[in-house]
Image (tube, rainbow, N blue to C red; front, top):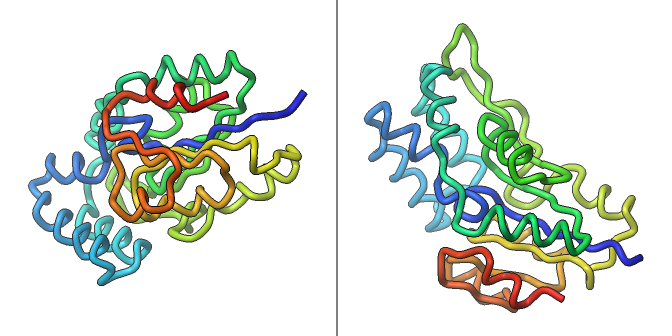
Length: 207
C-alpha cells in the first residue's frame, strides 16, 4: 500500500490564529511585534532574526498567561474534519510550525497528528526568557526530510498546506502544493489556491 503524507502548517492553517500577536495583545506590545513582523514580510530582516526580536519584546511574559493564550487559539473551520478524513484515507499527518510547543502539542493530540516539528520557548522562574535552538527555520525543518526518507514516501504522494512565505520550504517535498489564504508569493508556486477559511475545500483536490 502506497503511504501518503499530508504536511500542514499550524498557525493560520490548522489554527485560525497566530500565537505571538495574541500574546503581545495581553501585554500591550502589539504595535512593536507587528512592526517587526512587517519588516520580516518586506524582507528587511530574516525570519529567524525577526522571531528573536519578537521574543525579546515579550521577555518576562508569565507562563500562566502564555498558556492561557495558547489554549485559547481556535481551530480553523474544517480542521478536525479534514484531519479525520485524511486519516481515514490512509494519510500520515505531519504538523510543522515555526511557533511553539506551548500550543502545538495540544494540536497534535486533539487533531491526531502523527508527527510534529516545532520550536520551544524557554521560561525561567515563571517568565519568558528566550527560545531553544530552532528546529523549524525559514529554510529547513530539522528531521523532516529524514522522516520522509525513512517512510519511503514519494513526492507524488505528499500534500503540503501553507500560508506564509517562510513555509514554502515544505512545498519542495510535495506534489500537491496548497496555498491556503496565503501570501501572493506562495500562490505563485502553489498548484492549488484556496482563498476561503474552510480546510475541507482541500478534500476536493485529494485523491
